[in-house]
Length: 546
Image (cartoon, rainbow, N blue to C red; front, side):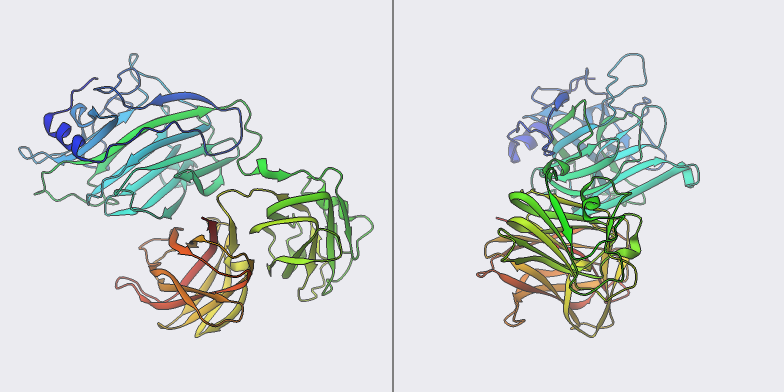
């Protein structure tokens, strides 16, 4: 299985910016991890005790993609594995490479793992007609499959993050949930891609930052692979006349495991409500305020009657806490939500500061700037609906890490619109299960969202959107709460895609000089030449402190 890099590759490897291998740990900050697989590719050839250079069944060709996998197309040099794709100038055959950690043969590696964290540091090729892939599959049957990342050469700024699982009611027994994240040009430099996989949850990370999560559907052990696919209906087809060599460079591939997956990343920041005291402006006798803090979503507090504007639910956390995330879950009583909600914080139970306000939802994570408070008060500012106000679970988090503040568009107050209509739309792949649909028929139309109490500082602004064939282009701008003196953030963004996706776009740095409520205006600039509409679909606005 060992192969010596040809001279042409050694010259290529010497010319590119080579990786400085990093000693990484899972970004998920839960503890108890141990390394189960590691290859830093520091030798002069591929380690045959860890990899084979065919698919696990020993074949070099798959029916749905035209490339042939060759041993010589996965050379190791200068601290990286360089997976190569080219059109053979003599035969015209499309040739590529794969490294696979499992062999169905009696000899060879047999590495596989159920659950854990899996990561690679790589640089994709941007050659049209190729698909860069770092992924996992079962040695027994397909599906399942877990794609840590797939990057199309024709679109190297988008990472596809996908889970496949067995469902006999689906075509080819293949049910799947695919989402995307758009950011940097992954062919222009090195980036890490990782996936946390537990019995309950799958979480994707790019460069150590969580990008997407979804429920887990797989219970079979899987093995690791990295390869370039070339010549299929998704990736497109490389030019038959281009016989140059193109590379996906891989710095390292690693896997970790741990014995306890009971704590999902992010939940380790949960503040446990021991000794907390809850009260409310009114309550049903059988459903007192304490039931929203009991850790059981099948029990709930409710207000005991018709929802009243100004009604409140309050928690004394016993001591001052730093927090930036709250979960409000209505449980089974989804019609018991407050349609409009304000959250205030206080140190002394007398002087209150608003830390969040917006639309209510059946289950919503609310992100805001890190705030210090002993008391929290939820104030119902809704429409007086007849169903009692209900909270099954209130969870408070002190996660003050890289995510900063994230504002769900469907929960933000709309300060104004021009030429558009807007509504909340359900989508299981959206970050909170919903997004804001903005219908527009022309350029120049706009919608303005208000985000509460944003601190002065420097932020990386990231916007989650839904892409699709009827979606247009937009320009984001921000102003203070007086709704004047807007300034653009980043350039024009295009939401068009042939099929639906959920990318996150990084708009660059924004530096508000004062602490106040801020307006974010999305202006329709036009539509993609291939698109059919001027609509927008906004999922969230994230502000990451710099």
